[in-house]
Image (cartoon, rainbow, N blue to C red; front, side, top):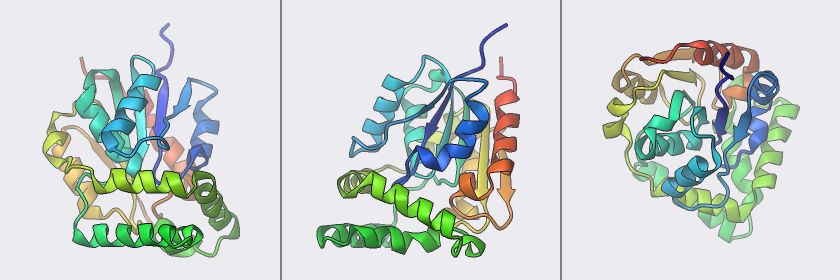
Length: 237
């Protein structure tokens, strides 16, 4: 009997492994679960290369938000190593002018010594309207931001702002792929999901009604069920 595939988790900006806590608790009893390092590089290519250097030879990759940008680069650098791909709350486009301007505003806040304000401005985008007043969830977001820190956040911003448009390379992805998105996401849109779903042959799109950007924490049981189903899918031969 073969061992279950290791699972590598890739996180978004200002988020730590805690954003995957329900998934780590669910899957670590049955397989190796690793959290990719996304704090040391200021390019997406560098994050992807580090993920590949730290990961087992072949693995399942679940990527959230900025982690999705890294995942797309992993699929360009070493697609043969990724047996299965899960994309959560992410998008394949490069930044447009509005997104770049918002990120420049975040950088200015940090340079002005107002790093704490970055998390406060992002909370309405990260959480669904029904969860923005949830004290435990809001505290968790703030704690992850504090644990990330200003210098790492700036590296992540530089990486995100410099990323390429991944849409042209999506059709090359052949690993069984699931796309999971909450329709109250304040960052990734339905159009972003449709772009990915249409380009990756055989991919599955699952939409969680009323869930925000942090679906792993807002809807852990549903996300875990979808990931369990994805992990159980047979690979194409």
